[in-house]
Length: 117
Image 1 (cartoon, one colour):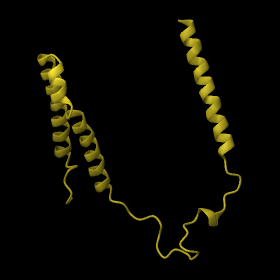
Image 2 (cartoon, helix red, strand yellow; image 1 turned 60 degrees about the vertical axis):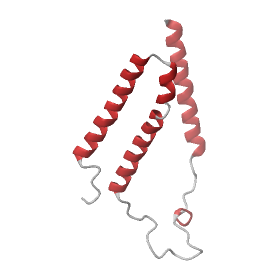
Image 3 (cartoon, helix red, strand yellow; image 1 turned 120 degrees about the vertical axis):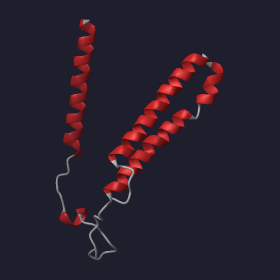
């Protein structure tokens, strides 16, 4: 038990020292306003470099990515069905699909999927 605690303490101290060293080394000494400004062929930019971004679009993109990854997890299920116990496969698949359906219902109920609001 003491060996585990010692290993944990050494790991925490070593990682903290490395992070502190990396922070000290990576600090920029001089911040130049001209170097940090947007550059447009040597001229001052006509518009702001920071364009407004729709948070609704971002939310729908994140929801799409989550469900896309979950569908990628569903694709090998027919192959797994052939090599595993049928009862456990049905239980696991049903639980996974119910979680997906509950998540979709929650997003729909919250109005996150409504684009026109």
